[in-house]
Image (cartoon, rainbow, N blue to C red):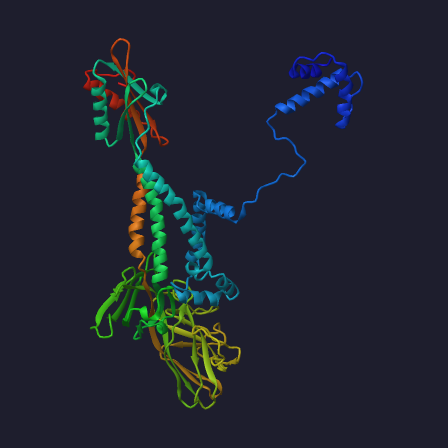
Length: 598
């Protein structure tokens, strides 16, 4: 017999005695199972028998060609499974991470609710991508449907996860610490000593010491009549952890309150202009679902002057230093006016509504006349900065030709340069943000402004689909300005064909004010403070248990054992166990306990 066959036979056990019936039926059985056994092949028979027995002893699942019937969960079962998945801490962390990722576009791309002028500038510079991003609600991220869906799922997940844990922790805090283990020597930290003092005296001293150190201590007796003290401390660790997560729910509730019961908007006001808190006067406005136009506070203000200063030399050349918007404020229509200086990060509060100074720019003042000298447009027109630090600003001037001799509309688009620098071979550009040498560079058009087409138009751009560009190249214009006018303050340019003229009268400054009412701030701020306190508690507090057992010995003395166990990783109570044992030994006149560190 080969070694392999011999090992299989030994694993199968002692070989049975030969039996004619078995010998006769074995090949038949094997044949019935589709196998083949050669007559007289004892080694193959033994190996097959060993294999069969080994398969019976195996823990591997038995192969089954029949389909396994899987019970259907049903609608209720699927709902329970979905709820358990949603309320797990793993899913809550995933949703929190998704919310953080979803907020990234809101911090990178300009937002309509914060700075609509920058959104308009983005449209002008990214004409292909801007409509796509707008369809994805990326210019209004925090009001978008997909952001709200993630927000709502996170809110539900946290509630379903934290509330049951809070209830379980509440019950755990009301439960007494567990009884002392029988063998305290097996615990990581252990100290012991013997004494002749009465067990009640030792246990009373131990309970008093542990309670003075804010341990929750209980006293008991085991089956042999030996007494013990069980003490636990550090419940506030889990309390802090739950407080942190409950505070996150509070923050979400506060943000939701601000969304439903608050509003925020933005308005651009030019010097000399004013604002009344009505829906029609906002450049952009987002009202909460529970807020209507009648709920807006009835205040108004006038921008008297805007002032800005910039660094004029050094490494931080052209960097802003101060921004001041001097306004006359009326809290109510009947209230007395108040002179207020609105500064960055120093908003004014009007009837619970905050008015912030967000940004600023320039509004060139122009006068447009037709060929008969009739004034078609006269006043400031807001130009928006393209985002550079020197305030190169673009915009459009629209002068409808109603009542003019030709009936043609006039339009101008181009740039305003606060401090123009003209250099041969390059377009003029601004070299400083303050208006020290202002210049207008404008292309002129004549035709139909298409303002009666029924479609909304931006006041910062010109629709030239039905207009013809005019040849307005003047002698004073530089060779690199192309077919455009270069106007300094006081310059007047006559348009060809007797269509009229345009005069650059001067400039004013505009300021953007963000107006917001967020009742959820009263919830968000204390929730954020509690979240920090809870996080500090969960990281700084250690949960641990200490047991004291007094055992009667045969020689009439008592063995006092003190042991501890950490409920938190890295919080082994070595010092507390040693100090407790030393204090008890000293109290019963034993200066140093056995097993305790000196």
